[in-house]
Each structure stands twice: as structure tokens, then as C-alpha cells.
Amino acid sequence: MPHLELAGASVLAAALVGAAIRGSIPYMFVSLGECLTETSGRINLGMEGILLMAAMTAFAVSQSSGSPWLGAVAAAAVGGLLGLLHAAITELPGVNDIAAGIAMIVFGSGLAFFFGKQFVAPMAPQLPVLDLGGWASAPATRAAFRVSPLFFLGILTALVLHYLLRNTRWGLHIRAVGDAPEAARSMGISARKHRILATTIGAALAGIGGSHLTLYFPGIWSEGISGGQGLMAVALVIFARWSPLRCLGASLFFGGAQALGPSLQSLGLNGVYHLLNASPYLLTLLLMVASCSRDGKLSGMPGALGGRG
Image 1 (tube, helix red, strand yellow):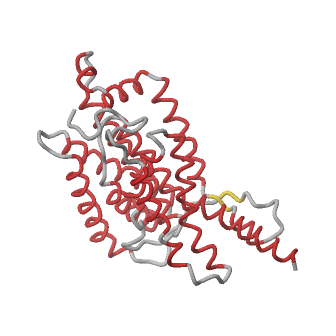
Image 2 (image 1 turned 180 degrees about the horizontal axis):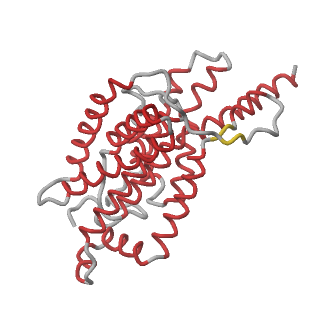
Image 3 (image 1 turned 90 degrees about the horizontal axis):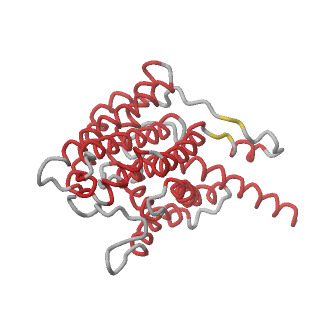
């Protein structure tokens, strides 16, 4: 009997780890993109709309072309275009980042819902997976460790972004326009150019996260597929203190919270399923409250955030 309980616990642990990895990928790419955007001194709350439009685009291109990788590239391109639009709008005089982001949520979601109606299908061609569970004897454990290559691409992206921001001239300029835009301008650094580039690249990264939703997990297109992950990732960046490397850990944390309800349901524990399924939203609320400070300044926060700079 204890042996059976131990086996059940190990299967649950494996399922949670696998589900946390799967669920972390959209958070990972959106948070890395938002981290880059905010480091330049801009906030893009429109990531939710970008995530949805990218997810629909990935599904449509994969279904039409038969190539899921082409779908992922198209999702990144569409995300970048929407990011460029957001960046151009927020550089206009008197435009507020928050208002522009809310408008982008509505715009991106509306486009995705309109064009996505013709792409309702059981499943488009899916991204390949890496089978890392060959060492396990239990089928459930082997299935849990079938990992999307996007997970490792996300880790690589975080490492590269960390290096670029900390060790290159371009990264120094991005941080300069985010921390002290007036000082950067006095040194001949174009705040507008760097912010537009950072916002565009950041939205393209979010687009890759959107492709994961329709080309790997859950692998279908529906209007509610993002579940607010684009907005939650903004809170995740605050929790990670604007660090690309900490965004990795925070993404796994959120992915694990998202996976807790379904994992327990798979073991027949249905009583608290809906409560645990809401844990990512509760975490977001708690993190926003915990991040509050009396002076409105957080450790690692770019100086230009909250101002026009």
C-alpha cells in the first residue's frame, strides 16, 4: 500500500513538472518580451491581444502550409508588426502607454476573432517534441517529459537577452533610455529609435509564445485560448524585477500553478479543481499587492516607467 502511494505521488510529481514546463512557455516568451520593452522605458499592456493574434496566425499558417515551424515564424512576424504599431502610437505626443496597451488588447483580440473564424479545425500540424522521458518506466512519466523545443529556445533567449542587456553597447543604450532618457538624449542616444526597436522585438517574442498555444499545448485555436496569460506576464515581469533570467523561474512558477488543478483532476480529485484552476489569477493579484511600495519605486525598475521620459 505505501508502495502504491509512493508510485502515485511520483506520477503526480512528474505530471506537475511536465505540465509546468508546458504551461511556462507562453509566460516565458511574453515576459521576456515585456522585460525588454519595459527596460527601454515603455509598457506594453497589449501583449494579450498580440498573444491571441499570434496564436491564430500560427494555427492558420500551419494548417494552410503544413509547416508548424512556418506557423511559428509567421506568429513572431505578426507579433512584431503589432509591436511596431504599438511603439509608433506611444511615440506620438500625449499618448499614454496604458491606454494604448488597452486599445491594442481590443484591436489584437478583435483581429484574431474575426480572421480566426475560418480556421476552426480539430488540430493544425503540430511542432515536434523532444522525448526526454526515455529513462522512465511509467507511461505517464514518459508522456510528461515530451517537451517542446520552444522551451529550450526560451531558455536560450533569456540567456542571450541577459547578455545583450548587460554586456553590449546596444544593451547599455536600451537601459540608458529606460533609466534616464534625458541623459541618454544628451549623449546622442535616440530614445525613440531604441524604444521602437525594443517594443517590436518584445512583441515578436510574445508572438512565439502565442504559437505554442496552437501548435503544441493545448494545440487548438479558440477565442479564449490565452486565458489572460498576456496580462499576467506583465505582473510576472514585476515579480522577476526586470531580469530575463528571473523571468525563467517566475514562468515555471506560474506554469506550475496553472498545472496544479488539471494534475489533481487527473488523479480523481475534482473537489478543488476550479479553485486551483484560478491559482494563476490569484497569484497575479497577490504579486501586484506584494510589489507595492510606499515610494512607488521597486528594485530594478527602469526609471522612465510611469512617466513620459
